[in-house]
Image 1 (cartoon, rainbow, N blue to C red):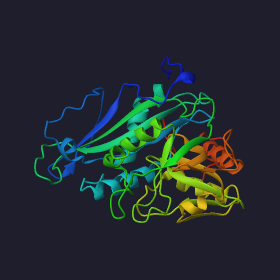
Image 2: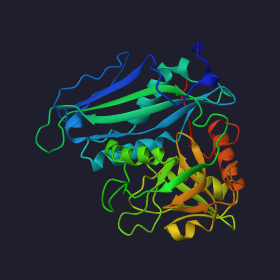
Image 3: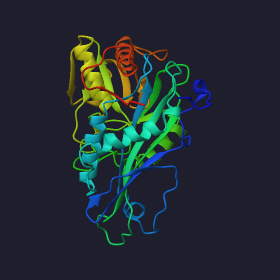
Length: 342
């Protein structure tokens, strides 16, 4: 198979139209079989449920070329599980077992020429999503839905390596205690946009959101979970019912324990104790881990011993091990790497 004529080493992290995408429709109480299409346009009624009441959920994962030339995805079963959890919360019909992974496989396979070669630093980003498609004027769930999967080749999230970033403690709340913070819904990201634009205007890369009930405990950023390393080398991540269950974060906790022999736990973390941490990072699909060098809490600076020049030593080991697993350089736990046979 001949790859597309793309300058893989200079790709940014943005959308590039590919040749094929997957589409399946829910109507009369059931999902159809779905199909691969070349049509990248979505045609909707002006009163479609997604446009009126933001009834949409999505996922994000990547397809990689491994060192031995295979095309793989990373733990897509967890994405399948999470999109159904998100859908159920928004009264969107869940996908039948196997449909999500089948759709991802078909879309990646159809666009195999766009999967970047091993060593280029680039990957194929996969975006599955579901939305209410029929007209809805009263406040209620839609009756019809569309499930789509698009892919686009992307470069590394950080060009030239991941330099530590500076973030701020936000005055905005990301999610209510019994709200939708733990699902991957478009509405969660829409409400974070003003906060992130404000942070950028003030010179910060991201926001640290605190729990909305007490504003004392660390939750997450607009699109990533936090990961900390204590001064005695323990990996800890925030525990909350209103943060997204990040697949990357869960994988890093496993890697810390089983590959690196570190103590690791998920627990409540107060803002007060963050100043005593040795390292801090943001973890998610796009960058795997973004190191944080400094947090600004309303003028008071929290500076981590790992500094502003490079990832802290434990964070770097976690990053290198997980990316090594994803790229096939390190043996993966059973079921983590899903091959797509071309």
